[in-house]
Picture 1 (cartoon, rainbow, N blue to C red):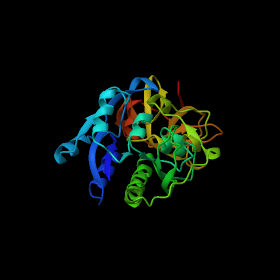
Picture 2: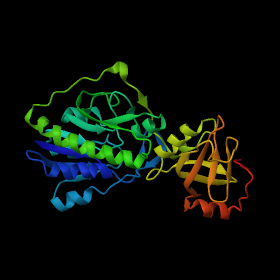
Picture 3: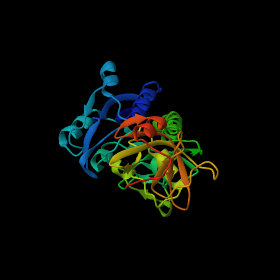
Picture 4: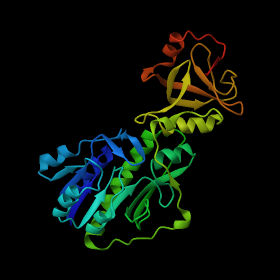
Length: 317
């Protein structure tokens, strides 16, 4: 089966490497994208923080590769991909909608990090963790005209554990996605795959996220803010708030037990000389254990010393 691969992320790179070792699969071309690119939902452009140089693999193996310049609507790129004469196209780690004329050229399949039809759209793992979900997964499906709405080839599930961050969850999802390709791509090649239509009544669509969407809302309680933090920690830009004209990114937190934290109001920061506490709504609080100030990672002790904290509460304004 002649396959064109479309991807530009670390996960996409792993998928490409996996397909290179599959029997009955011939990679005839690759479409990739630069780390920084323009896209319809953000006029300022976006940075793919999970970007990987897929073109290097292709060069070493003499696989044709094309990098998009202005999205996927141009005729030159389309005609190049058409000349590769693909039987199917596989998409992983990609931010752009695949145009219909591409999908008419060859059936197109992709991996989406949710249990479709739930969490269709952008940043599904981040949204699932923010919303306190206990389970998520990844879906291998055929692309259609809507957002992540084509028939399902296969799915795999995983719990969202209390100690997960977006990095640990994403690592498990990657392994499950590679397993899906290994299980089902040969079935697509030999015609034995059984596709299942999605139940549109169960679709939940979530929007893409931008770095500024990580600002913490102190009307939330500690559990909600804690989920918000772990959903956007490294390698993502992070959850943040303003403190004395500084931008404070929180990489790691824990929910305070009743006897652990200094009592503090929502949106206030205080310390006990060794630990840093953030007040949340409903008389709850978080213990901050890893943070950055204006992009510079600091230990909690260095933060306390740099800002000459005493034990009284400092208002977050």
